[in-house]
Length: 313
Image (cartoon, rainbow, N blue to C red; front, side, top):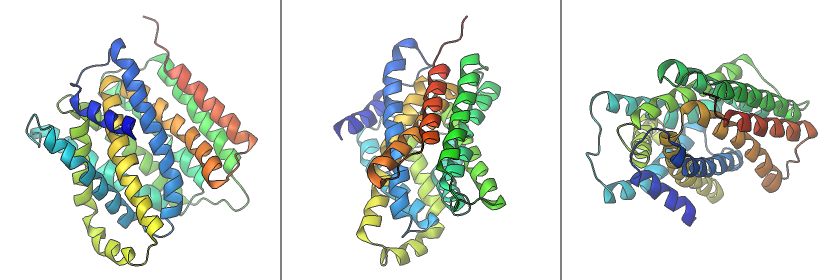
């Protein structure tokens, strides 16, 4: 608990800087916090999602996150609360796409495709991030990043084969929505990467949650209706999603993104979060992974190792 809070504080205090060798270790540690918390969200969503619809859950999640982050931002205010010009436009864009639309779209997609297929679709995002970072952020296309991303994607594909069963299903709507979720995720990361040149990670995450709250307000009436029927465990689960996988994990992700290239952080977080989520499902939900799932996880880890190698100069 203390380490998560410290990570949030570190994200708010650290000045924005380009990736440097010295900053790599704390950035990787921050990414590690994000990996564990984002992986845990899959376990919590499985139970809470049975009692809360996609829109109301997204609203409750970002509302809790905004409430958690607001005192930290106000207490550490060192600059205007709102950026100006294009920076504000980018905040609004990734706030709507990442903190609102992504959560809603992915939840709906999983009603049309099995969990393994959804994981494969969402983990197209690191590839999109690497391509986008090369084209639009001037990061180029380092061979380790490209090769590692492809290896990791292959590992997720193997994991998908291991999670399939006779009752699994997939239709065109689910496939399209899964790919849309991946594109929303990847585009939002690239937008936030540019925004982090002007504001710190805590500030960027807080603003994103506020935009997310506004974007999901149309679901407020439905949320009020579901609060009366949802069990306390579902509400506590949604609160956890807002406080930790959103407030803490998005802030530590922003910190890591400040000090690492978007192309490198994509495979590190995306593929390892998939592996950790399988292990957590095994531990907490008694969902024993198959041999193919374990093999795919090992391939994912190999892809991350390759992506972390530095290109020869």
